[in-house]
Image (cartoon, rainbow over all chains, first blue to last red; front, side, top):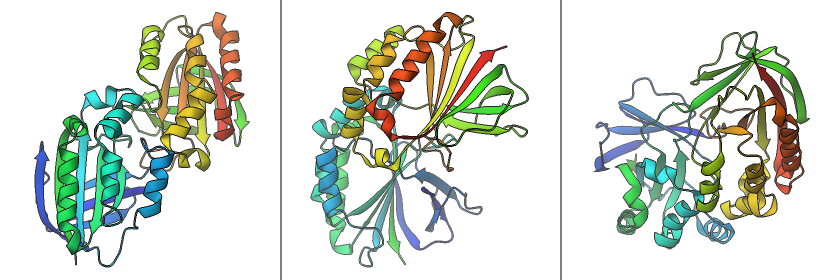
Amino acid sequence: MRTFSFAGGETGEWRIERIAAVTGESLPAAPRLRILQGPDAAGTAAWCLRGITSNERYVNRGEKGALVAVQPALGRPEARHAALIPIRKSSAWWALPQDERRAIFEEQSSHIATGLEYLPAVARRLHHCRDLATDEPFDFLTWFEYAPQDVTAFEKLVARLRSSPEWSFVDREVDVRLIRT
Amino acid sequence: MRTFSFAGGETGEWRIERIAAVTGESLPAAPRLRILQGPDAAGTAAWCLRGITSNERYVNRGEKGALVAVQPALGRPEARHAALIPIRKSSAWWALPQDERRAIFEEQSSHIATGLEYLPAVARRLHHCRDLATDEPFDFLTWFEYAPQDVTAFEKLVARLRSSPEWSFVDREVDVRLIRT
């Protein structure tokens, strides 16, 4: 099962430090986040976002090799900071053919190259929501884990991506920051 | 809602003429097919396959323009023949980076160029199953509609695609043929 549920509520290993709306509507406040494997909605959660890990959509062979060589696993003991960043892209983005989405993603926005600069400090897992059977509020849920000494670097990574041409197609984005307890 | 369910059973607008296993396990016999919009499983069906329409994964701008210019809509009165072809691709396929999947799909296998030769005779809708929240038996459900005089052309299209390099990555395929009643 490649499906993960992120439930904001009273319980969970992660304490929510802040929830900020970057673009569009925010998410309701919640003190904790629980991550569950599987599509089950957490009954008592304030909110529950679901996504599924999948094949990569844009990386080429060389980029994949470079990523695999340096990307760390989730769950490192020192990586007590995390960010859950749910994103939705506009219908204009989804109407673009593959070659134009790729060109915006990497040749214009250096999404992969920028991310590579922050490896192996930042561990990451991408979840897709757009093609779940149900209508979901976001297209992607990105989950990041990093150590306290990499907080500043992570802020820089996020700021660089948000200032890229690709981000002009983001029509909803929420930024949830967390500490493992 | 972009989700469609294909239910094989006692009811439905389409009479099933034959069900053939091309690669791997077949589907149970059923006299009729019902197509429903939405993810609801048909309670009494012998089988029910679900999929979701999505953005294109391989076509470039030029190919998209060529397709849009000639592809017909579903539901033409004369298109009384149909094929439902569910397909699963191997884990080796899904592990390939985007550029290599694209190269096999089009530069090596001419999937788009071959399909274009059979337009506007054959109408088509592709449904994705791989990224539904639940584990599905196929990755894609392809639905085709064509008129009686195009039956031979459609057989040729299917045979050409099955002999392409791309098809060496298909590890399950069932071919369901139908007539509108």
